[in-house]
Image (cartoon, rainbow, N blue to C red; front, side, top):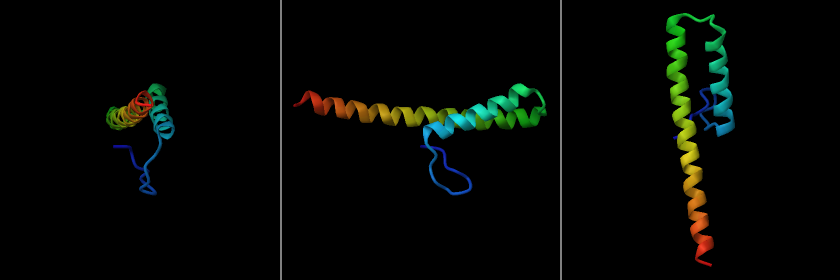
Length: 73
C-alpha cells in the first residue's frame, strides 16, 4: 500500500516517497537529533522503504501483465 499524505489523505507517488526518505536520511546524517528522534526517523524511513517496494512491485506486476498480453498477439 502506498503512503498517504497526512495533510490531504491522498496517496503519494514513488518520487515523493523517495524525496521524503532522502529528507529523513539527511536529518539522521546531520547528527543533530536525539536518540529518540533518530529511532522515530528510522521507523518512518522503514515504512517509506516498504511503501517504495510495494509501489515497485505493483508496477512490475502491471508490466508483466502487459508483456504477457503482447506475447499473445
